[in-house]
Image (cartoon, rainbow, N blue to C red; front, side, top):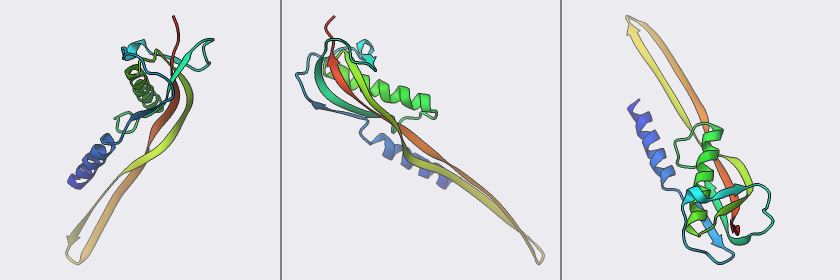
Length: 141
């Protein structure tokens, strides 16, 4: 059990060290704004100025459900856009990516006289992260 916990801690530390968002400038950045002011668009607004191509992932978060992973990736996308002064993100893609698995196993053996009895249990489940891309945009008010 101790080995499993140690392995899980090492995996969490490794995932936390991965980059979670990035950008490539395609326009002129503006002064940073509050991430709460960044709006997500699935359809382009009538007028906007493109600032950067963005990417973000939910990797390294403790999110377990698909919705939690989506929320974390979008939050990181908005934070990256806000650093560039973008008040909007035009969402381009969203996909699940396998990011690892967690497994556990155990067993025991007892000896009674000349008889050996053994047993064991094991299991695992896959971990997924959400990857999103979008355009950081400035929409005139």
